[in-house]
Image (cartoon, rainbow, N blue to C red; front, side, top):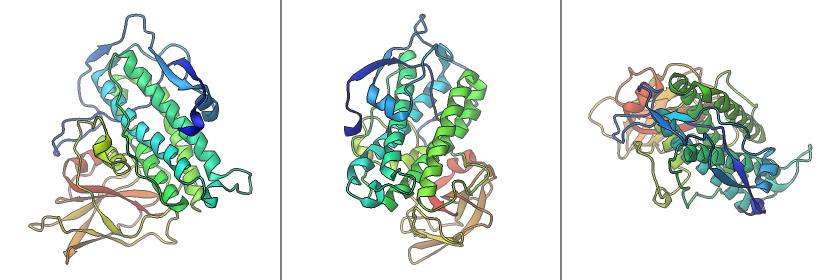
Length: 357
């Protein structure tokens, strides 16, 4: 990353951000709030994390480096270690996405020209990219403390076309990170409560970043009173849309779901003047031997459903009233699961982000 290429600094990593625990790779299972008993994976007896290489330029640009001081705990549950690896994977995609945008949009005046406050989207993205590298280094330090390997970054992250495309996708990937951290806070409260403070701190930073993307797309900073929580499998599948999975040296032991290829409304950085009343999607590979539904995940509410009509290879579903901000749509053959974890277990395709307001 050309913006962070100064001399390297040894830092010690005590804190973390994480995501909900993964489960088996069978589609019928997904990551949920932890229901497993605590199995401890201990670190070295000194409690000292191994050093992590992070450039001083990155720390300066981020507004601070990896936190100093003793780690919040020196042993971690198996649940926490799984969470660290999922978060390591998603944070790696986030940091690579932002760094790629800085390279591909460096001649786009909408990206580089300063606004009335003297800041450009490029300026702020430079700081956000650095902050994501700090998050990534923090997670890798925690994995090192537990003598666990880190998750190597995917080599190919798809480029953005222009500033509008960048802001739209930045909203999606950051919303996925926010959603997965919300769920992991619930999971770790049962197994590793000392990690809740660091995670909450990272969650607030991700939310501030997303408010910037929304405002840059001419939206309000927050269109909803609650962010939307996502299962690990849903967040993982959203993150995979940003990369060529074949370029990832290590994929996670989570289900890879078929895509729900939405054809309308088009996803944009700017929300429509009024929320969409329906969506359409490519249904050419969808089974037609029973009723189909779209399950809608939004805010802290139970999943709501709408019927799917398939005609000439195109699926259509109404958008339920009351959805705001960004919602996530998943194709399913049932309409009874009320939680995001339950819906994930029976998802046929998705999730697809839909910008409501």
